[in-house]
Amino acid sequence: MSEEKKETQKIDFSNLSRLQLMEADACTRCGECVKWCPVYVFDKKEDITPRGKLRKLRKIINAQNSLLLKIFKPGSFLAKLFCPQPVSDAYIRNFARDLYECSTCRQCHFVCPSNIDTVELYEAIRRSIINAGYGPLDTQLGLVTSTKSYDNPWQQPRSHRAKWTRTAKKPGGSTRSRSC
Ligand code: SF4
Ligand code: SF4
Image 1 (cartoon, protein in one colour):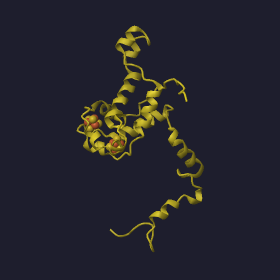
Image 2 (cartoon, rainbow, N blue to C red):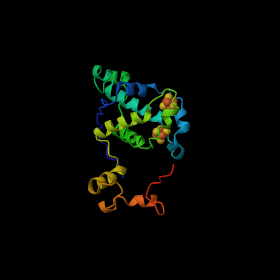
Image 3 (cartoon, protein in one colour):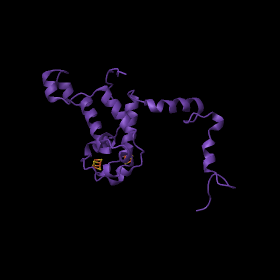
Image 4 (cartoon, rainbow, N blue to C red):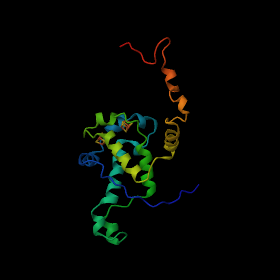
């Protein structure tokens, strides 16, 4: 199936704090986070590592917000020479998908020598890209529809919303253990 070429949407990153913008630039590409990311163990793609995500974030911010874009006419010889290369719609869609390949466990934050608060940063970026129309992802649409229709994400009728708690029930007791 051929992928329809779509126009790239401008992403408003103004919800990122100054500290978060500095953090995006503070990655030294040391790779410590790559050693510890539990998701990377199962899907060895550089783009889903914190290092990869921050690299792509910087590329998108530079491509869409560089001051040089205001100086040189888009598409001109000088723009091609001096301005950051534009990013395609597909590039941003892949970035959005990679952002959600993360369990938000924070392990990368704890080991990062630059002390980047990665998960807070991912959450802020997710808000920006979804507000720009790059989400929810196809894989999330079912969850959104189910939550709107049934108030739960696992497509169960409202009367079955708490069904999952049965697996946690202890014999002869409540669903929660009171022992320490
Ligand atoms: S540990 Fe921190 S500085 Fe090193 S590559 Fe990962 S995000 Fe960048
Ligand atoms: S927060 Fe996400 S990127 Fe960081 S170590 Fe955990 S799964 Fe990997």
